[in-house]
Image (cartoon, rainbow, N blue to C red; front, top):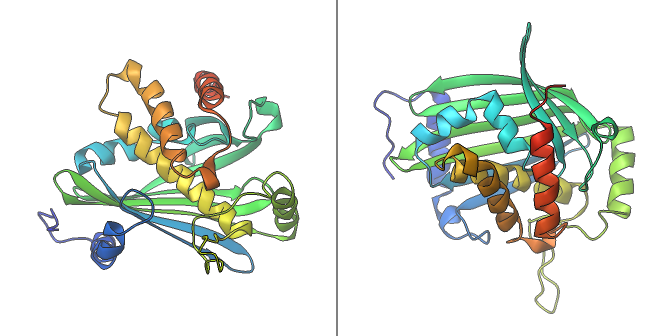
Length: 278
């Protein structure tokens, strides 16, 4: 596809266009029922998930929506574990006060607070990069980062790269191992390993499976938010919630956690709660 750049690309935009070209075949032949490539890595201390996706939204829709910290809270609240999000302007810069908790209704006092520094690192007429970073994350994690970069590729399409990563120390590994041995024991990720002799797929599990699931949840939140963004404002929240749940249910082995009415009731209440700064 021809790029839309009216002026020479920045190095970052050029690199993302190059990645789009390199992944063209994988984006067309994907198991995700949408043009998407998901990758994950695990080192001794860090977990990382990356999603590359071709989005059916023009840059003029995506850029103003996803460079706004307040709109990012509209995205974040769709994630099943997000209990609250509010953007605030502080002397040192913009902060997203995020609370992460269980997959069930939960009092804010029992959730984990994450203070994300929010920065629009780059913004041009056809490319932007947004960075969210926090010193501390949930379950004993640290150096928590979300990075989103988007480039225009046609008048009605953009190419997105989403990175979700964090460091896991000794305490964090113990907490995650406990979760994976109990509540998350039956959960898997999306990356396929060698199939069983009977031909059944075997998916990555453990901590890489965990980071893949959350990377996908954030991607689905972004996509659902953009999908509803052209509706009248009073209709947008309900459309976002319905779209996120419908999309997550396309991957029941990985992302089914509750029934639709339960998710909708919980998220409507949480979206209302986050209208009050705290």
